[in-house]
Image 1 (cartoon, helix red, strand yellow):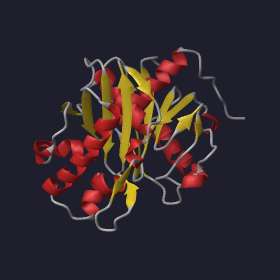
Image 2 (cartoon, one colour):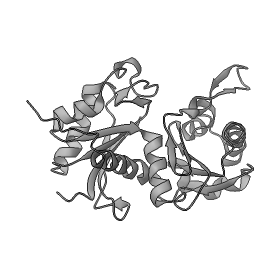
Image 3 (cartoon, one colour):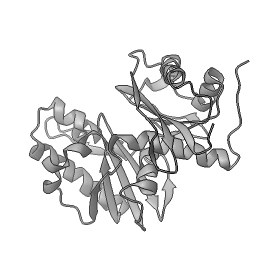
Image 4 (cartoon, helix red, strand yellow):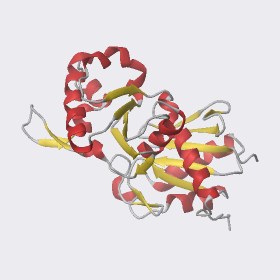
Length: 266
């Protein structure tokens, strides 16, 4: 197996996606496979979906996996949008290794997407502070300072005031693409709401560049003109491929640094 090829996995609320990534090119080598996220939202059901992807590609090499939650020392600390307490304390990399007989590395899914964009995409030549957002079912946020990742920010869960209820709720419940669809908002109405979130985020991080990715990235012509934040804004160049590519890249970097160890079936 070539060392510049890694199987990237992106676990989401609606789908578990995977593709073989060519790290020299920073893109997929072949097609992407998508398995609907099992409704049970348990570690075993997610492992089963990953196993289907591994089997389909007949994969025996390194695996990188993006997961929607805080990951510290390969232990899942939060999983607000995927099973909650079912995943807390799980070493998913170890479980993937046991199930698939491969080295595996797991990181926050937004961190994976940001890593891909700052390496191969819209943030590739940017210095200073770069913030990457994945806007889809929720809002994932990653931040880089001169190319160095600040992991596990989870700024999609910043609290914002809901005018309808008067309560402070998670920003992604108001400003994600799922919230736009759920509220049947026009793109302009959603963009005005989303812009308030961006201004809030800017006031906390003072980024030089904000990169917008995720599901809304392909519709940028419908909302970008309504955004007004005091920094550069770019649309992600890798679109919905970023999470898979970044997960593969993170696994490769950690494998080469000697952090990973092989776990085989017993």
